[in-house]
Length: 182
View (spheres, helix red, strand yellow):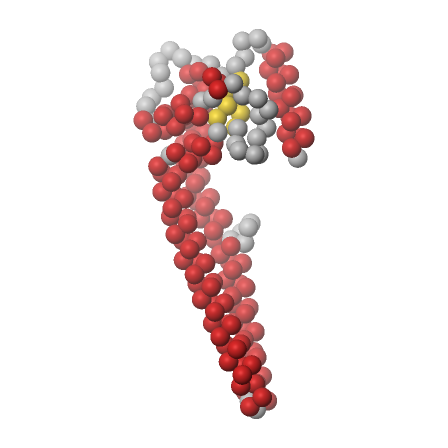
């Protein structure tokens, strides 16, 4: 996948180079932008709080299952067959509820955590993209790449083309774009 990204970057740079010597490529670090943006920090805090609540509930279910299982194992030899069967069924049901709860809350594709993250971060991401576009136009950039930690597709980036902090400033100030620069 990284090799594919490098090839795509090379193609973009080749196209940029042939389109015009005036073409300007800039970059941002979206992780830094989100880390610096107060509303993203707040959304992240709210997500973490909710995840903690769900995790605690899951741990509570696991503890209950463990306690019930230990109690059952201690008394198993003394139980009549009907009671034994009923207790085993109750243990299986509790285990199933815990698995279902975990899947409902934490499934990586359809869990409530994913949906909540998307709901909270989508408007922020849209705002960030609009700010990136505004700053890119003001700076005369034809392309803006995202340089994020280890998943970067930027092999080299001169700091003078880094728009990250200009985008953060734009988001924090909420200022209108400069006149006459498009």
